[in-house]
Amino acid sequence: VFEYVERNLLELLQEHPRGLEPKLIRSLIYQLCKAIKYLHDKSVIHRDIKPENLLVNNAHCLKLCDFGFARTIKCNTQEQLTDYVATRWYRAPELLLTQGIYGQEVDYWAIGCIMGELVDGNPLFPGENELDQLHCIQKVIGNFTEEQNEMFYSNPLFNGKALLNV
Image (cartoon, rainbow, N blue to C red; front, side, top):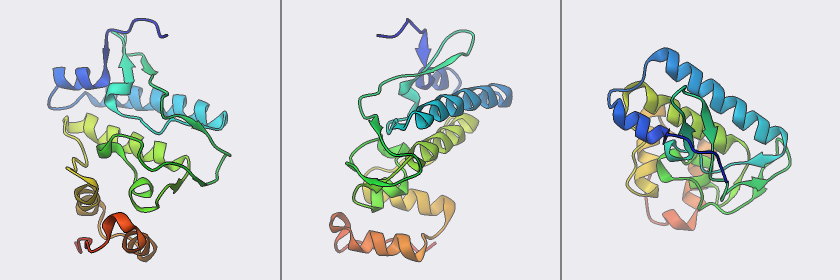
């Protein structure tokens, strides 16, 4: 049970469809990073960081919520965990490519995706499915590494599919 908070970050973005002011972005991302650092210091990964799970009160104090996908994990390690977590637009390539072997980095990826969205009000990687999600990521960051390509082609989910060459 959480205290009442006026809205979540998605609702704040809907109020400001062209993005937020840089000072507010900096404050919100700083608070989010502090919250994630606290969790990671306690060996917990959230695995579902998205605007709907970030509550924001009228004083712009951010609170992280919805720990339904959160799990304990040894610090700075990668473990076999379910890969069907996190909302697709905020899902790290590790979740899409590795068949469930990942660590704390998936939370950092989501923070970066949110930061990009706060700038102009548009999701950074609005994929329509897992393959399209990977293509959206490649369009922004470029081709995947050789290791990531190997992970893609060895993943049965993508059997017979191809990655983009950008």
